[in-house]
Amino acid sequence: MQVAELTSSAGRRELVLVATLLVALAAVIDPADAFIVAGLLPVVIVLGGVGLLSGLESPARPYTSLLLPAVLTSGAAAAVHLVPVGLWLLVGLLGLAVVLDQMLALEIGILAQPKGVSDGDRARVLGAAVGTAFVAFTGVAAVVPGGMPEPTAAVTAGAGAMTQGGIVVLAVADAIAALVIGWRISSLRFGQPLEVARSAMTYALVIAIAAGLIRAIDLPRLVGPAVLTLVFYLWDAQHGSAPARRQERRFLIEMVLLAVLAVVVVAWNTRISG
Image (cartoon, rainbow, N blue to C red; front, top):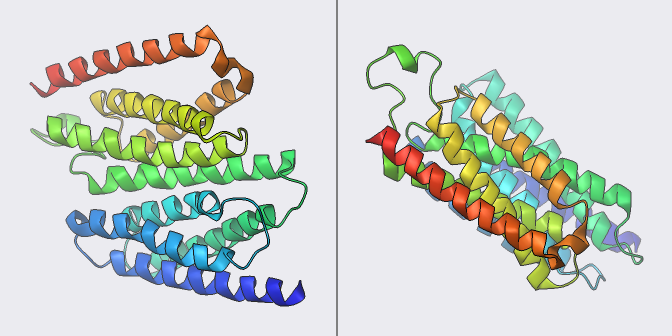
């Protein structure tokens, strides 16, 4: 056991180092190309993480445990463009390394538990998920043109303008991040993959709708990602409080209402863009 713990600890730090260096590399490339790096980083985290976790004796699926670290690193690779090059960038990279290391340690600890996940572990994963959501939403807004309006955009002709295609990219990217994060949270509540998928899909729908609404009213800078994160947390608090309710008719009603609201948001943004 001591040898396994030592091996996992060394492998964890190697993975953190590689991820941090790749995020640092993303800081010096053009923001337009950041989508490519942000899209490749989750693959690196998952592939490296599977090798790290494969030595653990656990019946749980290691892929699920790597979802939050993958999204956190991807979001950081995009959001790093908001940090000026210099001391603050070094501080940000150091903070990312510490948080990522602690997140991997938490997931490894959960996998190594023979008696399942405790309420404390679920609370810690939820906290990590909310923080990851903020980084991911910030990263999406940072690399999508017009995704993060300036406070003075209202008085500058054409400033903060965003095409309909940009709004779609913003909403879809935020929804994908919410889907993956919601999948990790839901995997701790449900045993059946279908239930996990259904639950995670609701996170994606809610965030996609909220992203469209927030972009329509042009919330400045980090206010938009912060509000999206709050929506994510509130939806988890309401939707995840009673798992059995997904078998009830109320769950279907919620999905219909979300679909109707999505149509309204699309129509609203189309009218604004037009």
